[in-house]
Length: 127
Length: 229
Image (cartoon, rainbow over all chains, first blue to last red; front, side):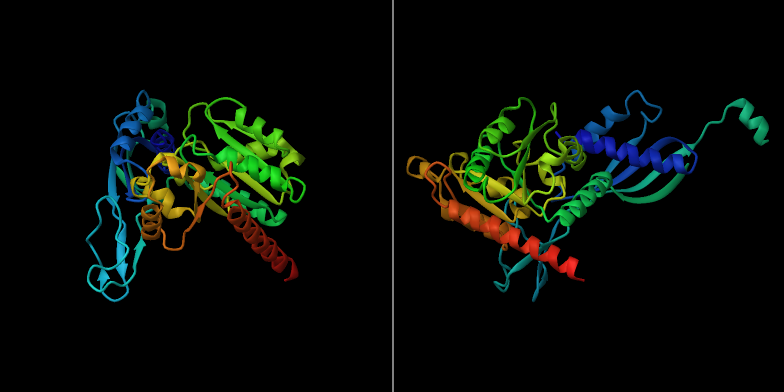
C-alpha cells in the first residue's frame, strides 16, 4: 500500500509550505489525484489520518479532488463514454482512433493553516 | 486562517532524484530498464537468461527489489553479472532514492554499464507511480496469470513500452487467449509492443534481445550526438 508513503510526502510538502510562511497547525490540504495515478483516494485519506495522528497537525483534513482521464477524438472531440473499467480504443461515433490524455495528476494544490500560536514572551517582544 | 496555493507534485522528491539518475545514465550511456510484474511471473528468470546470453558481450548489471531475502541478486550473480539486492522491508515498490543509494554503495561494480536491469518489487500497481530514472518500463505477464490482467491493471500496461508474455511453453496447458491480451494492450497503449517468450524453451527470446539491442544502440547514438555538439 504505497498510499502511506504518498501521505508522508503530502505531509512533508504541506508542513514545509506552512513553515515557509511561519504558519501554525495545518487545517486542510487539497490534493489532486488523477484516474491513472494508481492511487485510491479513500486509502490516501486513511493513510493521511495515520501519518498526522499524534502530531500538532492531527486535526488537519485531507480533501481529494479526483480527475478523470480524457478520451479525445481528433474529429469528434471529447468522448465521455468508457468501456467498463477501461478506455475505448476507437471513437464510438466515427471509428477514428482515441487518444487518452491527463489523469496522471498527483499534486498538492492548496494548503490552509492557522496562525502560529506564539508563546507569551514572544508576544511581549512583538507587541 | 491562511490559505495558500502550493501546486507541487506529491512525488516531487522522487522525480528530482530520478532526473539526477537519468542525467548520470545519459553521461555513462547506460540503458536502464525497469521491469514490473506480479510476483512469480518470471522477471528473474528472464534476467538470468539475458545474463547468460550476454554476460561476455555487454557490461550488464542488475538491481533486485524485494521485501526480503537476497535470493534474486544471488541468482543473477550465479548467472555471471554483478547484482545488488534492495530490500524494502515491506514497501511495495522501489523509489529513485533507493536506486541511487544502492548504486553509490555498489560503486564501480555497477557503474559505467551498458545495460542496468532493475527488477522491481513484484506488484502490478505501486511501482507504476515511481520513476527510477529508467529509459523505459517493461511489464511482464505470465500465461498462468490469466488473459484479463491488462484491463484489470491498466496503468502499468498503458505505460510500459513493451509487455513481455512469459512462460509461453505452458500455453498448451492453460486457458490463455493471446489475441484477447493483444487487443487489450492495443486499446490501452497503441504504441506498446507485445513479445511472447519462454525463457525455458527459448521461444521469442530473440525478440527480447532485439528490443534491448535496438534501444541500446539508440541510447549510445544519442550520447554520441551530445558529445559531438
